[in-house]
Each structure stands twice: as C-alpha cells, then as structure tokens.
Amino acid sequence: MENAWYESGEGSGFESASPSCVLDILPCSITITGNIVLVIFYGIFLGFAAKVISDGAEMLLDLGLPSALVGGIVLPLLGAVPDSAMIIASGVGKSREQANKEIAVGMGTLAGSTIMLLTLPWLGSIILGRVDIVNKQGKDGVTSKFTVNSFVKQAIHQISHT
Image (cartoon, rainbow, N blue to C red; front, side, top):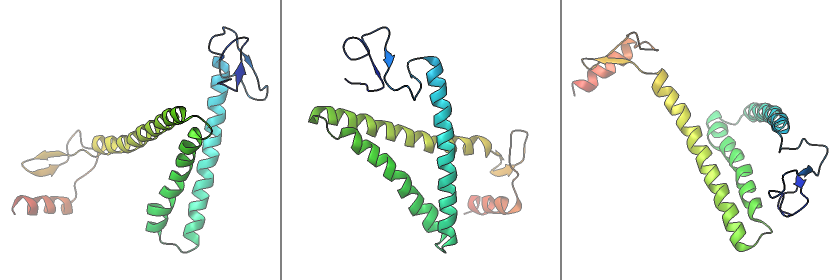
C-alpha cells in the first residue's frame, strides 16, 4: 500500500472513487473539510513550535552567548537539522531508484522554500524602502516610505564627488 492514511477496495488508493480513512483519529485529507481541519491543526502546531524556538533563543542569550553567535550560527543550524533529517528519512528503506527520486523531490522543495524565504523579504525591502533620487540626491517624495536624513545625504554627496 502506497498511502497509509487511507485504503481503497482495489489498488493503490488513487484508483478507487471512494477511499475510506484508515485512522479515525485524524480527519481524512481527501475531503475539503479534512483538509481545512488539517491546515488549522498544522497552523496551531507551527505557532506553538515558533513560540518554543523563540523561548529557546532567549534562554541561549540568557546564558551569556553573544547574540551574533546565537542568531547567526546556532539558530540557522537548528533550523537546518530537521530539514536534513526529513530529506534523509524520505529515502530510507526504499529501493535505490525510489530513494533517489524521493530525495530529489525533497531537495527541490527545500531549495524552493529557501529561495522564497530569501526573495520575499528582499522584495519587501525594495518596495517599502524606495526613495526618490533627484540629481543624485535622496528626496522625500510622495512615493517614499522612509525619510532621508542628513547622514544619507552627506554619504551620497561624498560618493558622487569621488
């Protein structure tokens, strides 16, 4: 059986029009109601996990570790370990061809999510941080979201005259 969450009368479960849920504890993810409930449960679980990670990071800072070490090295490593474990576990116990396929899908998914998580903040900073430039000087305008203080104007002036 390829999918352990439900079983069908014949074949792999995708062939039958009316699959039945195997586990009655969890909602059946074949229906829209089951999908909505799973999304809600997953969101609650992720919120709790984010709170635990935040509390753990504060505890690491309370130990006296430098914030650059905690935020720049420790937390990214702790975030990479579960991703690596899931990718490796997806290929365990399968044939070599199936394991290669599963791991390739996991690596593609990880790369895509990483690219998205890097692109969205970059795009937001570009859109929200735009400032009109007039005659090589930053100018507060209608489309500007942030003001240009004297230090920025001085730096632009020094760069333009070098």
